[in-house]
Amino acid sequence: MAAKQKKVIITCAATGSIHTPTMSPHLPLTPSEIAEQSIEAAEAGATIIHLHARNPEDGSPTPSPDVFMEFLPRIKQSCNAVVNVTTGGGHGMTLEERLAGAMRTKPEMCSLNMGSMNFGLYPMLDRYPEFKYEWERKHLENSRDFIFRNTFKDIEYILRDLGEAHGTRFEFECYDVGHLYNLAHFLDRGLVKPPLFVQTIFGILGGIGADQENLMHMKRIADKLFGEDYYWSVLAAGRHQLGFVTMSAIMGGNVRVGLEDSLYAGKGRLAKSNAEQVRIVRSIIENLSLEVANPDDAREMLALKGGDAVGF
Image (cartoon, rainbow, N blue to C red; front, side, top):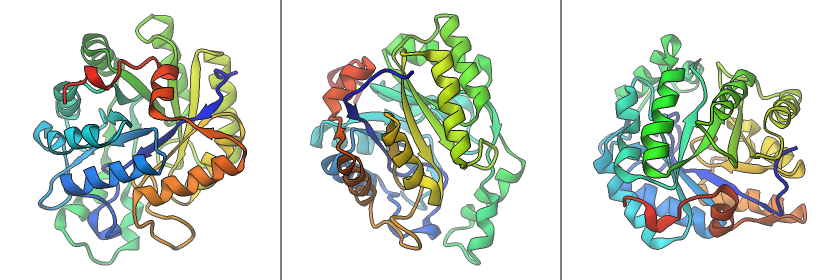
């Protein structure tokens, strides 16, 4: 069984690199928008804020450390939330580009994808007859012939040069059952150390499907592999978001919401902010007679180095 916990961690993934400006006017794109929505999400109850950077000119994903530094210090100064910086970056970025922001900022946490995979965004092309920027269409179409690379060598490099070198710990993103076994491999080798924060992900084309049976199976395998050495969290793409995170909370796990994962706050209704999604899931958690973890609770649970030890 996963580690027993008295409180539920809410991760909010504020912008990501999947959705594009045409899809929602509420998606934060500029450094100011990302900072404002992240701070609002923290005030609404988010424990951890997971962040990507966007080109402020057109909203395209960017690996630029300079752009990260336009919003990370502001978030840190305005709230106590744990800041989690992507190492996944965006489609087409090299590993070095994907790591540039994290290497510069040395955060308490980073995401770390636990295996290479197809990562199909192209079905979204059919939903939008026109796009605000030309890059959006190319971004989606290119995912038809794209492999999101996360080799064993890549993962070793990230664990060593970011994790060991800077004391950063990880949100281990597992998009399929094999990714759990990859993480167990690194645990057996001593390259990762408990407590693990295991994010099981459902509904991405190329990963495990958003079926309740799959959620149960991923939890069973994680329990088998990690015992009480891990904290379990769930995210699900699009319309599956709230249903799956509710299941996680009921089963003693943690949750992730945010406009990276879903643009909606109910059937057919665009979320007006990340904070709106956080408020919804917080209400669900509290109505289940559970308590939301604050950032210092998460730091203790996940053995994080603390906000004073980061590079921003």
